[in-house]
Length: 123
Image (cartoon, rainbow, N blue to C red; front, top):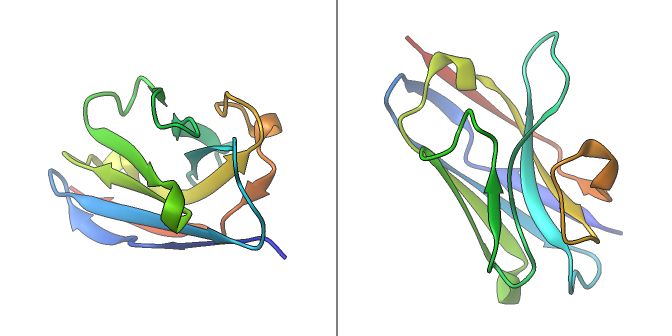
């Protein structure tokens, strides 16, 4: 069965950095976009970043543009989210996501979700 295993979450002070990783297994993901969503308490799960199969196109939410970088290695079935200049409002559970289409910026486009990893940014 398909599994997306996330790691790298934790607690940091504002201005710090974290790197999240997502290792996928259980099937071939050829052609699938990968991305990250996040969900804060009482809020809906929102789009953060996505990257196409070829890694030729990336897309970021306005709130993280210029601070976060998404990357992938298809040979390892792994994606990363490098988060810099973290702010308290970045505090959320971050979910890795995979979808079969070229776009992955809506929850409805997600085929598989990771279990989530907590990111807490203190002021």
